[in-house]
Length: 331
Ligand SMILES: NC(=O)c1ccc[n+]([C@@H]2O[C@H](COP(=O)([O-])OP(=O)(O)OC[C@H]3O[C@@H](n4cnc5c(N)ncnc54)[C@H](OP(=O)(O)O)[C@@H]3O)[C@@H](O)[C@H]2O)c1
Image (cartoon, rainbow, N blue to C red; front, side, top):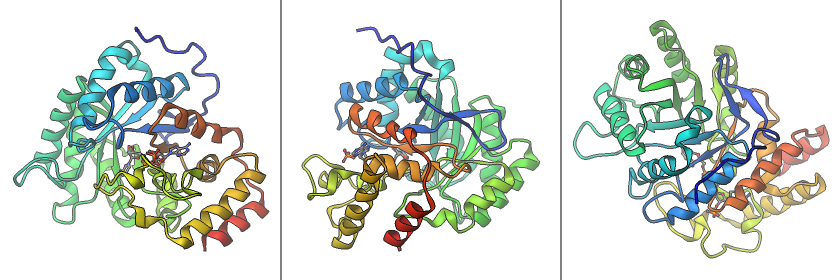
């Protein structure tokens, strides 16, 4: 059936300015790392994207290597985009990335100009797009001069293949250097995509300060620690969950759920209940309470999870007492 987006879609979403830029992003964005590959059910992916857009999520995040197999999430997104979202292109922010292994030989990995430019050309073909809104360097490359990688990002914007550029998983010092180079080139960095959740708080040790100082937005990935910070693992590892399906590629494994973790999850769950939220909603609200955060980048295996997670926006305020109890649990 032809898709017509919900006319109420902009009513309940909050939009935040991305750093010092002109771009607003939804406080909750959707990533297609899992559940959109050729191994997955395409119609489920369609329903997740429709639910997200109907709820005001205007930002979909991809990468060249998402799948599996690598490239298939972009291919599937291309199909769904053509069917459902083509007429909404100007209401959408679509991101992709390159930086992890993608093809054989010396030009399909890391951060050379050769890799980044070729990879984005491939991504655009797979997604059937003329341009992406944001193109990221997916991870720092210790071997390639930072100037070359940043010049490649600048070139891509000048070619009209991306409107904005971002970096992912760069440490504060290397991020600052990248921002300075990009500023000089005339293509300021829009956004940084780091891993950040209650269980992984490294960005609090300097990165968020650097981003604020340089006017760069922040979109944390895996804010639910891939599902650990939800109520799904409270009673063991359910069938079909990410931890049970052995997806590789950095996905959580069964042994991530140690007894200590489970104990923390149970205690956090009690605080969430007292706030009138579930654990997923509290975990997302806890990140969004910081105004330096532009958007939380969630994943979802079902449309209902999208709706559930967006519920975080109903309560983003934490009392001092709640924060100190949470800090104690996370110590
Ligand atoms: N830049 C990078 O290097 C990088 C790395 C990783 C990810 N990312 C980006 O970040 C996005 C999100 O990462 P992620 O998928 O790890 O995020 P996440 O939000 O931490 O985890 C998503 C998973 O949590 C479970 N879940 C989500 N909402 C739930 C809810 N309301 N209740 C119960 N369970 C829920 C689902 O697991 P089940 O499948 O078990 O149902 C879902 O697949 C990716 O799609 C990608 O775009 C970027």
